Image 1 (cartoon, rainbow, N blue to C red):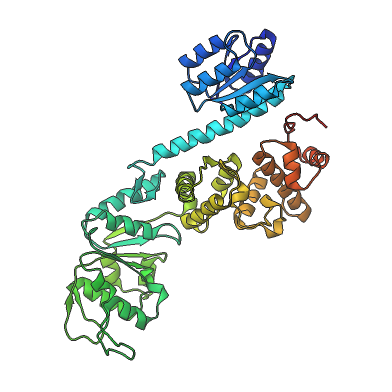
Image 2 (image 1 turned 45 degrees about the vertical axis):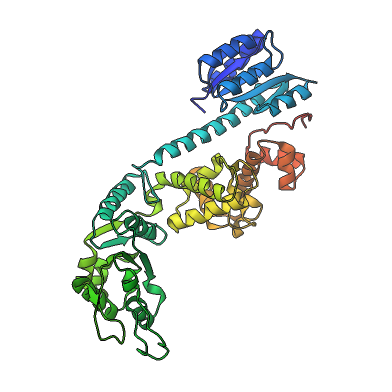
Length: 482
Protein backbone atom coordinates (compact mmCIF):
# COMPACT_ATOMS: atom_id res chain seq x y z
CA UNK A 1 0.00 0.00 0.00
CA UNK A 2 1.66 3.21 -1.17
CA UNK A 3 1.54 6.07 1.27
CA UNK A 4 2.25 3.90 4.34
CA UNK A 5 4.93 5.61 6.46
CA UNK A 6 7.07 3.37 8.65
CA UNK A 7 9.60 3.95 11.42
CA UNK A 8 12.04 1.05 11.88
CA UNK A 9 14.06 0.83 15.12
CA UNK A 10 16.78 -1.86 15.18
CA UNK A 11 20.38 -1.77 16.41
CA UNK A 12 21.72 -4.42 14.00
CA UNK A 13 23.03 -2.53 10.91
CA UNK A 14 22.76 -5.35 8.36
CA UNK A 15 19.33 -6.43 9.57
CA UNK A 16 18.12 -2.83 9.62
CA UNK A 17 19.36 -2.24 6.07
CA UNK A 18 17.78 -5.47 4.78
CA UNK A 19 14.39 -4.59 6.25
CA UNK A 20 14.51 -1.04 4.89
CA UNK A 21 15.41 -2.29 1.40
CA UNK A 22 12.63 -4.92 1.44
CA UNK A 23 9.93 -2.45 2.51
CA UNK A 24 11.04 0.35 0.21
CA UNK A 25 11.08 -2.10 -2.70
CA UNK A 26 7.30 -2.54 -2.44
CA UNK A 27 6.60 1.18 -2.13
CA UNK A 28 6.63 1.97 1.60
CA UNK A 29 8.23 5.12 2.97
CA UNK A 30 10.70 4.10 5.69
CA UNK A 31 12.77 6.01 8.27
CA UNK A 32 15.28 4.07 10.38
CA UNK A 33 16.78 4.53 13.85
CA UNK A 34 19.54 2.50 15.56
CA UNK A 35 18.51 3.15 19.17
CA UNK A 36 15.27 3.39 21.08
CA UNK A 37 16.08 6.95 22.15
CA UNK A 38 16.60 8.02 18.51
CA UNK A 39 13.39 6.26 17.50
CA UNK A 40 11.34 8.04 20.18
CA UNK A 41 12.77 11.38 19.05
CA UNK A 42 11.83 10.67 15.41
CA UNK A 43 8.27 9.63 16.16
CA UNK A 44 7.72 12.78 18.23
CA UNK A 45 8.89 14.87 15.29
CA UNK A 46 7.14 13.03 12.44
CA UNK A 47 3.82 11.21 11.91
CA UNK A 48 4.07 7.48 11.15
CA UNK A 49 1.45 4.87 10.28
CA UNK A 50 3.58 2.02 11.64
CA UNK A 51 6.51 1.60 14.03
CA UNK A 52 8.54 -1.63 13.82
CA UNK A 53 10.87 -1.99 16.79
CA UNK A 54 13.19 -4.61 18.20
CA UNK A 55 12.50 -5.28 21.87
CA UNK A 56 16.18 -5.44 22.81
CA UNK A 57 17.75 -2.04 22.13
CA UNK A 58 20.52 0.06 23.69
CA UNK A 59 19.16 2.88 25.83
CA UNK A 60 15.36 2.92 25.68
CA UNK A 61 14.14 -0.60 24.87
CA UNK A 62 11.32 -1.67 22.54
CA UNK A 63 8.64 -1.48 25.24
CA UNK A 64 9.63 2.14 25.89
CA UNK A 65 9.31 2.83 22.15
CA UNK A 66 5.89 1.18 22.17
CA UNK A 67 4.68 3.25 25.15
CA UNK A 68 6.06 6.49 23.66
CA UNK A 69 4.32 5.73 20.35
CA UNK A 70 0.93 5.15 21.97
CA UNK A 71 1.31 8.33 24.02
CA UNK A 72 2.30 10.47 21.02
CA UNK A 73 -0.02 8.92 18.42
CA UNK A 74 -2.49 6.28 19.70
CA UNK A 75 -3.59 5.31 16.17
CA UNK A 76 -0.04 4.50 15.04
CA UNK A 77 0.35 0.73 14.90
CA UNK A 78 3.38 -1.00 16.44
CA UNK A 79 4.97 -4.34 15.50
CA UNK A 80 7.66 -5.70 17.83
CA UNK A 81 10.57 -7.94 16.90
CA UNK A 82 11.51 -10.50 19.54
CA UNK A 83 14.15 -13.17 19.85
CA UNK A 84 13.15 -16.84 20.15
CA UNK A 85 12.42 -17.61 23.78
CA UNK A 86 11.16 -14.09 24.62
CA UNK A 87 7.50 -14.86 24.03
CA UNK A 88 6.44 -13.57 27.45
CA UNK A 89 7.82 -10.13 26.62
CA UNK A 90 6.12 -10.18 23.21
CA UNK A 91 2.77 -11.06 24.80
CA UNK A 92 3.27 -8.20 27.25
CA UNK A 93 3.84 -5.87 24.31
CA UNK A 94 0.54 -7.02 22.78
CA UNK A 95 -1.22 -6.16 26.04
CA UNK A 96 0.27 -2.67 25.83
CA UNK A 97 -1.26 -2.16 22.39
CA UNK A 98 1.16 -3.69 19.89
CA UNK A 99 -0.49 -4.72 16.62
CA UNK A 100 1.57 -7.91 16.25
CA UNK A 101 5.01 -9.41 16.85
CA UNK A 102 7.48 -11.38 14.77
CA UNK A 103 10.10 -13.79 16.12
CA UNK A 104 13.74 -13.93 14.96
CA UNK A 105 14.89 -15.42 12.70
CA UNK A 106 12.23 -14.62 10.10
CA UNK A 107 11.88 -14.35 6.34
CA UNK A 108 11.30 -10.91 4.83
CA UNK A 109 8.07 -12.20 3.28
CA UNK A 110 6.73 -12.82 6.80
CA UNK A 111 7.47 -9.24 7.80
CA UNK A 112 5.97 -7.84 4.59
CA UNK A 113 2.81 -9.86 5.18
CA UNK A 114 2.37 -8.27 8.62
CA UNK A 115 3.06 -4.80 7.16
CA UNK A 116 0.46 -5.46 4.46
CA UNK A 117 -2.11 -6.30 7.15
CA UNK A 118 -1.29 -3.03 8.91
CA UNK A 119 -1.69 -1.29 5.57
CA UNK A 120 -5.22 -2.67 5.20
CA UNK A 121 -6.15 -1.42 8.67
CA UNK A 122 -4.71 2.03 7.94
CA UNK A 123 -6.50 2.18 4.58
CA UNK A 124 -9.82 1.28 6.19
CA UNK A 125 -9.27 3.93 8.85
CA UNK A 126 -8.52 6.55 6.20
CA UNK A 127 -11.57 5.58 4.14
CA UNK A 128 -13.76 5.80 7.23
CA UNK A 129 -12.39 9.26 8.03
CA UNK A 130 -12.98 10.35 4.43
CA UNK A 131 -16.56 9.10 4.67
CA UNK A 132 -17.05 11.10 7.89
CA UNK A 133 -15.75 14.22 6.14
CA UNK A 134 -18.18 13.67 3.28
CA UNK A 135 -21.09 13.48 5.72
CA UNK A 136 -21.38 17.26 6.02
CA UNK A 137 -24.16 19.62 5.01
CA UNK A 138 -22.95 19.71 1.40
CA UNK A 139 -23.53 15.98 0.92
CA UNK A 140 -26.47 15.19 3.15
CA UNK A 141 -29.92 16.59 3.75
CA UNK A 142 -32.70 15.23 5.91
CA UNK A 143 -30.99 11.85 6.27
CA UNK A 144 -30.21 11.55 2.52
CA UNK A 145 -26.53 10.90 1.74
CA UNK A 146 -24.76 11.41 -1.55
CA UNK A 147 -21.47 12.78 -2.88
CA UNK A 148 -22.23 11.64 -6.42
CA UNK A 149 -22.77 14.60 -8.80
CA UNK A 150 -26.32 13.49 -9.66
CA UNK A 151 -27.20 13.11 -6.00
CA UNK A 152 -25.79 16.55 -5.19
CA UNK A 153 -28.20 17.96 -7.78
CA UNK A 154 -31.03 15.98 -6.13
CA UNK A 155 -30.11 17.32 -2.69
CA UNK A 156 -30.05 20.89 -3.99
CA UNK A 157 -33.51 20.43 -5.51
CA UNK A 158 -34.85 18.85 -2.30
CA UNK A 159 -33.53 21.80 -0.26
CA UNK A 160 -35.24 24.22 -2.63
CA UNK A 161 -38.49 22.24 -2.62
CA UNK A 162 -38.53 22.10 1.18
CA UNK A 163 -38.54 25.89 1.40
CA UNK A 164 -41.47 26.29 -0.98
CA UNK A 165 -45.09 25.19 -0.57
CA UNK A 166 -45.88 23.72 -4.00
CA UNK A 167 -46.72 20.07 -4.77
CA UNK A 168 -43.73 17.79 -5.40
CA UNK A 169 -43.49 14.67 -7.58
CA UNK A 170 -40.76 12.17 -6.62
CA UNK A 171 -39.73 9.63 -9.26
CA UNK A 172 -37.42 6.64 -8.86
CA UNK A 173 -37.10 2.88 -8.77
CA UNK A 174 -38.27 0.91 -5.77
CA UNK A 175 -35.85 1.27 -2.87
CA UNK A 176 -34.17 4.49 -4.02
CA UNK A 177 -35.41 6.50 -1.03
CA UNK A 178 -38.55 8.29 -2.24
CA UNK A 179 -40.15 8.21 1.20
CA UNK A 180 -36.92 9.56 2.71
CA UNK A 181 -37.12 12.52 0.32
CA UNK A 182 -40.75 13.14 1.33
CA UNK A 183 -39.67 13.11 5.00
CA UNK A 184 -36.84 15.56 4.28
CA UNK A 185 -39.14 17.95 2.40
CA UNK A 186 -41.69 18.00 5.21
CA UNK A 187 -39.22 18.16 8.11
CA UNK A 188 -37.41 21.13 6.55
CA UNK A 189 -40.52 23.03 5.50
CA UNK A 190 -42.58 25.67 7.37
CA UNK A 191 -45.18 22.89 7.88
CA UNK A 192 -42.88 20.73 10.01
CA UNK A 193 -44.82 21.50 13.22
CA UNK A 194 -47.89 19.85 11.69
CA UNK A 195 -48.50 16.23 10.62
CA UNK A 196 -46.87 14.32 7.80
CA UNK A 197 -49.52 11.77 6.78
CA UNK A 198 -48.59 8.86 4.50
CA UNK A 199 -50.79 6.67 2.29
CA UNK A 200 -49.74 3.77 0.05
CA UNK A 201 -52.11 4.07 -2.92
CA UNK A 202 -51.42 0.61 -4.30
CA UNK A 203 -52.25 -1.25 -1.08
CA UNK A 204 -56.05 -0.58 -0.96
CA UNK A 205 -59.09 -1.16 -3.13
CA UNK A 206 -60.79 1.88 -4.69
CA UNK A 207 -63.60 1.95 -2.10
CA UNK A 208 -61.24 1.63 0.86
CA UNK A 209 -58.83 4.18 -0.59
CA UNK A 210 -61.68 6.66 -1.11
CA UNK A 211 -62.76 6.31 2.53
CA UNK A 212 -59.12 6.40 3.69
CA UNK A 213 -58.34 9.66 1.89
CA UNK A 214 -61.58 11.59 2.34
CA UNK A 215 -63.17 9.98 5.41
CA UNK A 216 -66.88 9.20 5.84
CA UNK A 217 -69.94 10.11 7.86
CA UNK A 218 -71.77 7.71 10.14
CA UNK A 219 -74.06 5.49 8.05
CA UNK A 220 -72.38 6.43 4.74
CA UNK A 221 -72.18 2.71 3.90
CA UNK A 222 -72.79 -0.62 5.55
CA UNK A 223 -70.50 -0.91 8.56
CA UNK A 224 -69.89 2.84 8.92
CA UNK A 225 -70.96 2.95 12.56
CA UNK A 226 -69.27 6.28 13.30
CA UNK A 227 -67.82 9.34 11.60
CA UNK A 228 -64.22 9.02 10.47
CA UNK A 229 -61.82 11.73 9.33
CA UNK A 230 -59.79 11.02 6.20
CA UNK A 231 -56.08 11.46 5.60
CA UNK A 232 -56.49 14.82 3.87
CA UNK A 233 -58.30 16.14 6.92
CA UNK A 234 -55.69 14.67 9.28
CA UNK A 235 -52.93 16.35 7.25
CA UNK A 236 -54.48 19.84 7.60
CA UNK A 237 -51.70 22.49 7.65
CA UNK A 238 -49.17 19.67 7.16
CA UNK A 239 -48.11 17.38 4.31
CA UNK A 240 -49.83 14.41 2.68
CA UNK A 241 -47.49 11.87 1.05
CA UNK A 242 -49.16 9.65 -1.56
CA UNK A 243 -46.79 6.78 -2.34
CA UNK A 244 -47.30 5.02 -5.71
CA UNK A 245 -49.66 7.78 -6.74
CA UNK A 246 -49.83 6.24 -10.21
CA UNK A 247 -52.09 3.56 -8.67
CA UNK A 248 -54.87 6.05 -7.89
CA UNK A 249 -58.12 4.98 -9.63
CA UNK A 250 -59.50 7.47 -12.17
CA UNK A 251 -62.43 8.50 -9.97
CA UNK A 252 -60.18 9.31 -7.02
CA UNK A 253 -57.76 11.19 -9.31
CA UNK A 254 -60.65 13.52 -10.18
CA UNK A 255 -61.47 14.09 -6.49
CA UNK A 256 -57.80 14.80 -5.62
CA UNK A 257 -57.54 17.28 -8.50
CA UNK A 258 -60.69 19.06 -7.36
CA UNK A 259 -59.35 19.27 -3.81
CA UNK A 260 -56.09 20.80 -5.02
CA UNK A 261 -58.00 23.37 -7.08
CA UNK A 262 -60.66 24.31 -4.54
CA UNK A 263 -58.91 23.43 -1.25
CA UNK A 264 -62.05 21.69 -0.02
CA UNK A 265 -63.69 18.25 -0.19
CA UNK A 266 -66.66 16.25 1.07
CA UNK A 267 -66.55 13.19 3.29
CA UNK A 268 -68.39 10.14 1.96
CA UNK A 269 -72.03 10.65 2.84
CA UNK A 270 -71.34 14.26 3.88
CA UNK A 271 -73.45 17.27 2.94
CA UNK A 272 -71.06 20.07 3.86
CA UNK A 273 -67.64 20.80 2.35
CA UNK A 274 -64.54 20.79 4.53
CA UNK A 275 -61.73 23.26 3.85
CA UNK A 276 -58.15 22.00 4.18
CA UNK A 277 -54.66 23.42 3.75
CA UNK A 278 -52.50 20.51 2.65
CA UNK A 279 -49.26 20.24 0.75
CA UNK A 280 -49.26 17.20 -1.53
CA UNK A 281 -46.14 15.14 -2.22
CA UNK A 282 -46.54 12.20 -4.60
CA UNK A 283 -44.11 9.41 -5.45
CA UNK A 284 -44.04 6.67 -8.07
CA UNK A 285 -41.68 4.30 -9.86
CA UNK A 286 -43.84 4.66 -13.01
CA UNK A 287 -43.20 7.19 -15.77
CA UNK A 288 -46.27 9.38 -15.20
CA UNK A 289 -45.78 11.26 -18.48
CA UNK A 290 -46.21 7.97 -20.37
CA UNK A 291 -49.18 7.08 -18.15
CA UNK A 292 -50.79 10.37 -19.20
CA UNK A 293 -50.17 9.62 -22.89
CA UNK A 294 -51.82 6.21 -22.48
CA UNK A 295 -54.83 7.73 -20.70
CA UNK A 296 -54.03 6.03 -17.38
CA UNK A 297 -53.42 9.20 -15.42
CA UNK A 298 -55.25 12.54 -15.39
CA UNK A 299 -53.22 15.11 -17.34
CA UNK A 300 -54.31 18.09 -15.22
CA UNK A 301 -53.46 16.24 -11.99
CA UNK A 302 -50.05 15.36 -13.43
CA UNK A 303 -49.41 19.03 -14.25
CA UNK A 304 -50.41 20.04 -10.73
CA UNK A 305 -48.13 17.45 -9.14
CA UNK A 306 -45.22 18.08 -11.47
CA UNK A 307 -44.61 21.65 -10.27
CA UNK A 308 -41.34 20.38 -8.77
CA UNK A 309 -40.00 17.01 -9.91
CA UNK A 310 -37.29 15.13 -8.01
CA UNK A 311 -35.84 12.12 -9.84
CA UNK A 312 -33.75 9.72 -7.75
CA UNK A 313 -31.06 7.77 -9.63
CA UNK A 314 -30.72 4.03 -8.90
CA UNK A 315 -27.75 3.02 -6.76
CA UNK A 316 -26.04 1.31 -9.73
CA UNK A 317 -25.73 4.77 -11.32
CA UNK A 318 -24.14 6.30 -8.22
CA UNK A 319 -21.62 3.61 -7.27
CA UNK A 320 -19.33 6.16 -5.63
CA UNK A 321 -22.02 6.58 -2.96
CA UNK A 322 -22.22 2.87 -2.08
CA UNK A 323 -19.46 2.84 0.52
CA UNK A 324 -20.44 6.28 1.87
CA UNK A 325 -23.90 4.93 2.64
CA UNK A 326 -22.53 1.56 3.79
CA UNK A 327 -20.11 3.19 6.27
CA UNK A 328 -22.92 5.37 7.61
CA UNK A 329 -25.23 2.37 8.01
CA UNK A 330 -22.45 0.34 9.68
CA UNK A 331 -21.96 3.05 12.28
CA UNK A 332 -25.71 3.40 12.79
CA UNK A 333 -26.46 -0.32 13.19
CA UNK A 334 -23.33 -0.88 15.31
CA UNK A 335 -24.49 1.81 17.74
CA UNK A 336 -27.98 0.33 17.92
CA UNK A 337 -26.64 -3.17 18.56
CA UNK A 338 -23.92 -1.99 20.98
CA UNK A 339 -21.10 -3.25 18.78
CA UNK A 340 -17.76 -1.58 18.06
CA UNK A 341 -17.18 -2.38 14.41
CA UNK A 342 -14.45 -0.32 12.73
CA UNK A 343 -15.35 -1.03 9.12
CA UNK A 344 -15.46 -3.54 6.28
CA UNK A 345 -12.64 -5.87 5.28
CA UNK A 346 -11.05 -5.09 1.89
CA UNK A 347 -12.80 -8.05 0.25
CA UNK A 348 -16.17 -6.98 1.71
CA UNK A 349 -15.68 -3.44 0.40
CA UNK A 350 -14.74 -4.84 -2.99
CA UNK A 351 -17.82 -7.07 -3.12
CA UNK A 352 -20.14 -4.24 -2.08
CA UNK A 353 -18.63 -1.91 -4.68
CA UNK A 354 -19.14 -4.44 -7.50
CA UNK A 355 -22.74 -5.39 -6.72
CA UNK A 356 -25.49 -3.80 -8.88
CA UNK A 357 -28.07 -3.54 -6.04
CA UNK A 358 -31.32 -4.18 -7.94
CA UNK A 359 -33.13 -3.33 -4.70
CA UNK A 360 -31.19 -0.05 -4.44
CA UNK A 361 -30.56 1.61 -1.05
CA UNK A 362 -33.22 -0.50 0.68
CA UNK A 363 -31.33 -3.66 -0.31
CA UNK A 364 -28.03 -2.14 0.84
CA UNK A 365 -29.62 -1.38 4.21
CA UNK A 366 -30.71 -4.99 4.63
CA UNK A 367 -27.29 -6.34 3.65
CA UNK A 368 -25.43 -4.07 6.10
CA UNK A 369 -27.92 -4.80 8.89
CA UNK A 370 -27.36 -8.52 8.32
CA UNK A 371 -23.58 -8.04 8.34
CA UNK A 372 -23.64 -6.18 11.66
CA UNK A 373 -26.10 -8.65 13.19
CA UNK A 374 -24.34 -11.88 12.19
CA UNK A 375 -20.72 -10.73 12.14
CA UNK A 376 -18.42 -12.71 14.42
CA UNK A 377 -15.36 -10.49 14.09
CA UNK A 378 -15.44 -7.77 16.76
CA UNK A 379 -13.77 -5.22 14.47
CA UNK A 380 -14.49 -5.94 10.81
CA UNK A 381 -17.43 -7.03 8.66
CA UNK A 382 -16.45 -9.72 6.15
CA UNK A 383 -18.13 -11.07 2.98
CA UNK A 384 -19.51 -14.10 4.81
CA UNK A 385 -21.30 -11.77 7.24
CA UNK A 386 -23.06 -10.00 4.38
CA UNK A 387 -24.23 -13.17 2.66
CA UNK A 388 -27.89 -14.18 2.89
CA UNK A 389 -27.54 -17.97 2.92
CA UNK A 390 -25.34 -20.28 5.05
CA UNK A 391 -24.92 -22.46 1.96
CA UNK A 392 -23.36 -19.66 -0.09
CA UNK A 393 -19.72 -20.09 -1.31
CA UNK A 394 -18.46 -17.46 1.12
CA UNK A 395 -19.72 -19.58 4.00
CA UNK A 396 -18.87 -22.99 2.67
CA UNK A 397 -21.68 -23.98 0.27
CA UNK A 398 -21.83 -24.58 -3.46
CA UNK A 399 -22.43 -22.05 -6.24
CA UNK A 400 -25.86 -23.41 -7.07
CA UNK A 401 -27.08 -22.26 -3.65
CA UNK A 402 -25.39 -18.87 -3.56
CA UNK A 403 -27.26 -15.65 -2.91
CA UNK A 404 -27.49 -13.10 -5.70
CA UNK A 405 -25.20 -10.70 -3.85
CA UNK A 406 -22.23 -13.06 -3.60
CA UNK A 407 -22.88 -14.75 -6.95
CA UNK A 408 -22.92 -11.49 -8.88
CA UNK A 409 -19.81 -10.20 -7.14
CA UNK A 410 -17.86 -13.40 -7.72
CA UNK A 411 -19.00 -13.62 -11.32
CA UNK A 412 -17.76 -10.06 -11.92
CA UNK A 413 -14.45 -10.96 -10.30
CA UNK A 414 -14.12 -14.08 -12.44
CA UNK A 415 -14.95 -12.11 -15.58
CA UNK A 416 -12.33 -9.49 -14.74
CA UNK A 417 -9.77 -12.28 -14.36
CA UNK A 418 -10.80 -13.95 -17.60
CA UNK A 419 -12.14 -17.05 -15.85
CA UNK A 420 -14.91 -18.89 -17.71
CA UNK A 421 -17.87 -20.06 -15.62
CA UNK A 422 -19.46 -22.03 -18.43
CA UNK A 423 -18.60 -25.39 -16.87
CA UNK A 424 -19.74 -26.53 -13.42
CA UNK A 425 -16.25 -27.71 -12.46
CA UNK A 426 -14.69 -24.36 -13.36
CA UNK A 427 -17.37 -22.57 -11.35
CA UNK A 428 -16.78 -24.79 -8.34
CA UNK A 429 -13.03 -24.20 -8.48
CA UNK A 430 -13.46 -20.42 -8.70
CA UNK A 431 -15.88 -20.36 -5.80
CA UNK A 432 -13.61 -22.63 -3.73
CA UNK A 433 -10.63 -20.38 -4.39
CA UNK A 434 -12.61 -17.26 -3.44
CA UNK A 435 -13.85 -18.89 -0.25
CA UNK A 436 -10.35 -19.98 0.79
CA UNK A 437 -9.07 -16.43 0.21
CA UNK A 438 -11.94 -15.01 2.26
CA UNK A 439 -11.30 -17.38 5.17
CA UNK A 440 -7.55 -16.72 5.11
CA UNK A 441 -8.26 -13.00 5.28
CA UNK A 442 -10.63 -13.42 8.23
CA UNK A 443 -8.08 -15.41 10.23
CA UNK A 444 -5.28 -13.07 9.17
CA UNK A 445 -3.29 -15.77 7.42
CA UNK A 446 -3.31 -18.25 10.32
CA UNK A 447 -2.92 -21.59 8.54
CA UNK A 448 -4.21 -23.82 11.34
CA UNK A 449 -7.23 -21.62 12.01
CA UNK A 450 -8.09 -21.47 8.30
CA UNK A 451 -7.84 -25.24 7.93
CA UNK A 452 -10.12 -25.72 10.94
CA UNK A 453 -12.77 -23.37 9.52
CA UNK A 454 -12.58 -25.08 6.12
CA UNK A 455 -12.67 -28.59 7.59
CA UNK A 456 -9.30 -29.50 6.04
CA UNK A 457 -5.92 -30.62 7.29
CA UNK A 458 -3.10 -28.09 7.05
CA UNK A 459 -1.51 -30.20 4.33
CA UNK A 460 -4.75 -30.31 2.32
CA UNK A 461 -5.09 -26.55 2.65
CA UNK A 462 -1.49 -26.12 1.49
CA UNK A 463 -2.17 -28.33 -1.54
CA UNK A 464 -5.25 -26.30 -2.49
CA UNK A 465 -3.34 -23.03 -2.11
CA UNK A 466 -0.66 -24.34 -4.48
CA UNK A 467 -3.32 -25.54 -6.92
CA UNK A 468 -5.10 -22.18 -7.04
CA UNK A 469 -1.96 -20.04 -6.93
CA UNK A 470 -2.82 -18.54 -3.54
CA UNK A 471 0.27 -16.92 -1.95
CA UNK A 472 1.80 -18.61 1.06
CA UNK A 473 0.22 -17.75 4.40
CA UNK A 474 1.98 -17.07 7.68
CA UNK A 475 2.98 -19.86 10.02
CA UNK A 476 1.14 -19.96 13.33
CA UNK A 477 3.05 -18.48 16.25
CA UNK A 478 5.31 -21.07 17.82
CA UNK A 479 4.72 -23.71 15.11
CA UNK A 480 7.23 -25.16 12.73
CA UNK A 481 6.52 -25.04 9.01
CA UNK A 482 5.25 -28.08 7.20
